[in-house]
View 1 (cartoon, rainbow over the protein chains, first blue to last red):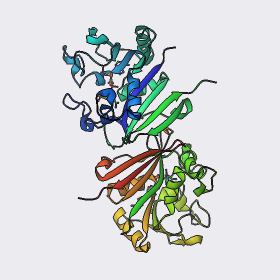
View 2: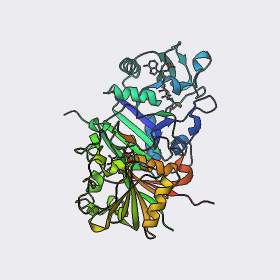
View 3: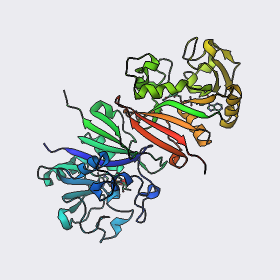
View 4: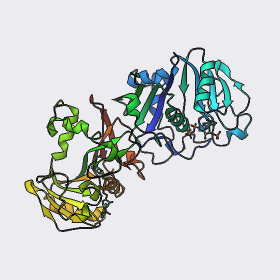
Length: 211
Length: 211
Ligand SMILES: NC(=O)c1ccc[n+]([C@@H]2O[C@H](COP(=O)([O-])OP(=O)(O)OC[C@H]3O[C@@H](n4cnc5c(N)ncnc54)[C@H](OP(=O)(O)O)[C@@H]3O)[C@@H](O)[C@H]2O)c1
Ligand SMILES: NC(=O)c1ccc[n+]([C@@H]2O[C@H](COP(=O)([O-])OP(=O)(O)OC[C@H]3O[C@@H](n4cnc5c(N)ncnc54)[C@H](OP(=O)(O)O)[C@@H]3O)[C@@H](O)[C@H]2O)c1
């Protein structure tokens, strides 16, 4: 059975998944690269950190996925919808290598990139979007790629099977919060926490078996 | 030099230090005892958990303090100010054993309890309150006992030397948030994170030396 997973989703101690304001020059606003420095340091990302816990978690981003779903604000900076040539932050060969569904209220025709990534743009609620992604995933899992708004919507809809959060020891104070309106995840998920020598803490949420 | 410290301050993953509503029957509202179950399980608190990491952290609550400062909402449920006989949640011999300063807009005369705890009630800003507590502490350290509002106010005023937070793997969704209006603590504090086998994560904030 195909499952729906979130990986390497990084938040500050106060629960922000991005700083503000988001822009072309600063995709994460005043957070800069601090939310993802732990990941860039891993061998998986070409960094010179150890092949340890951060690396092991980071690699799961690429394991067994047949599609990704992301939000409009992950795909580009405010206003990208007005630029017909915008094809994402990631250059010619984006790191998804599968059909990738961008949720937006201003859809456009699909764009085929190098390396197996095709961007599809759609206006759809989480259930419909997941159906479309599953159909395209050829039996693979579906990654919910973020940002916070989309993660929150999929949690609310009860569609997430596994979620890996990374708690980064900074206090952002402002940005987009993951937790707003979310409650009692401990009722439906086993939650494992483990700190890394790098200073981040990995939180693994695994959906409990229904008894 | 006397220092100002916070210990065993427990928050949910989404940053709430208490649930809601606070009442005589449920001091932590819908959070119940879940924020402090890790602590009650320690030998320090008479529990049957191991003498491990949670116990080591918990014990620091009692080390070297000459006074505590707490907020009105830690001292009693909403409305305690209307009850002249209210002397706190903790019975005849409260676990402070020092002068203990309760910040409130409706001060009353001091109350001497058993075991060395005397409650003093005062309306004062954090700087003034800390001065009063230091004067009473006979060279000992001053504990900022909470709740969230008071911890936040002392952080804002730059008066906290050490802060031990305990991240409990539950998502409360509502209550009183620790982080509101706090930003960039990483600039002034070293932050160490370590997960316990019990499932909680201890966060130690230590003020950086001024260079
Ligand atoms: N911390 C991490 O690990 C991580 C991971 C990924 C991304 N991020 C960052 O998070 C930020 C983006 O997060 P965000 O919460 O601002 O936004 P987001 O979740 O990326 O996107 C939200 C937007 O997507 C569109 N959308 C969402 N659901 C839709 C639906 N059902 N139908 C149609 N459109 C829908 C809407 O945009 P329109 O109405 O404009 O179409 C909505 O405003 C970026 O800075 C990104 O880099 C962080
Ligand atoms: N998670 C933990 O580890 C932990 C630790 C301690 C407490 N708690 C819980 O946290 C909750 C209380 O937290 P809280 O944030 O609601 O309130 P709080 O911080 O305990 O108290 C805030 C109140 O104290 C009074 N106050 C604060 N500063 C003052 C000042 N400078 N001068 C005069 N009065 C001042 C005001 O009350 P008035 O205006 O009414 O006088 C204010 O509303 C309780 O449920 C408590 O059990 C949790």
